[in-house]
Image 1 (cartoon, rainbow, N blue to C red):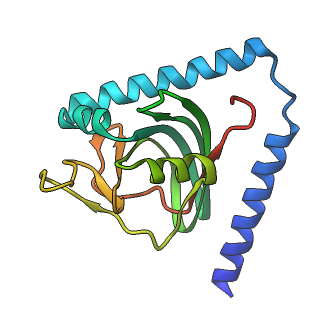
Image 2 (cartoon, rainbow, N blue to C red):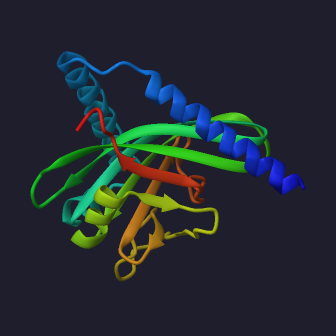
Length: 193
């Protein structure tokens, strides 16, 4: 019964967020360019911060098929939480930039606000293309393991989400060694692309 109530709360939160995003008016070209610039600025600042706390990440991002950078803001009140964010994905081979969004839903007891940045690193083109074109769902059962050293293809300070896909999570305190972005859906931003 309790899990059913949490599920219903999550559905209501998603519906409210969906309706509020539909209610916004279409962007003018000037607003679109300004919003794109804001996302690019956030991505550059996040990468610079990552490279400062984890210098080897710069080489990992440069050698990858591509990468994605997101900023997330989330809130949890009692048994349900949600979050949303924006970002971009970059194909290192073609230099194409795709603007994206993320939506997070979580269940479980808690209270608070969280803000963090994510940097995805895709070793191969197929995973990057799947992320951009099909979106990505990081479910509650998704596991992630933090790597403290560089062995083989392991990236120091990053979490392995799946073979060839790595994730750096930055909080105000630096790199996080646990994945808190579960229950998250990534998808193309229809307004900014």
